Image 1 (spheres, rainbow, N blue to C red):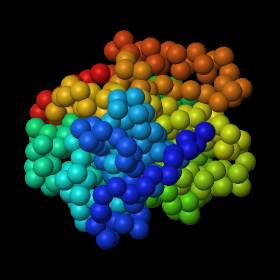
Image 2: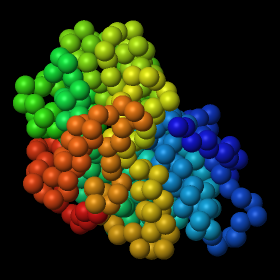
Image 3: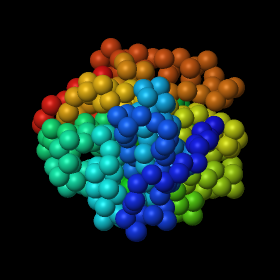
Length: 342
């Protein structure tokens, strides 16, 4: 299901290089002392995945908390665009949400210049502690453990694969999690990985999926946004190929979809922006795990057997009680500074 986001008028002047790909929101009637929030992402705001869900959570927090969403900058794909966009947002907002793992370097450059602005860095950590930065991650590798076990059980060839955009820790965690989960179900299962370097490029995703299918993979997980369409196309042109999503269930988009490692980024962003507005969000790193309710593996209706449902419950329970220990790469590297596991 795609979330529809309202069109938002421009409220602040943005660098010329960003103006064509940016939009923003502001209610002229809002209080002058309302907490102001800005949002920047390297992907389109309506990507049907990570960015769209995160932005929806920010909007919920703003609406419920009487804040003001002054600006949305999306499609900031280049590093200089990201730095310039964050600088403009930081100069005009109390809270700036930097939505994407690739933004950690831009945040590290910009945040020290604006000590009175609270930055929320999403899906990545900084290399060093910053007093005005809260990095928010989700332990997606735990979801991937369950997905890998399910995919291994359903695979006829015992070959499965994961396709992602940039090769960043938040994406490689899906691969390492699937690899460990598949081995728990069947040590003989082979797990492939591929990176297109773009969450929304349909053509590259299709090529990567076709290559995996040619190598015998019959279960494919898409850690992509609108680029998932390329995987659907490749799966539809072959026989016996099944697909898994991340972030949310997209069962109505393609008949080959089995389920999803659901990540409630909307809920995570709603809660963290609300905490930041109340001056209750700590600086440092915050990770949301299974116990937080931010993660779960879910099947599309009618796709799962009783045995597969039991497998999901078993693996999830064993992760939660600590009897399954995540292997290297499944969890994001824990930073050396202040860290909170939720």
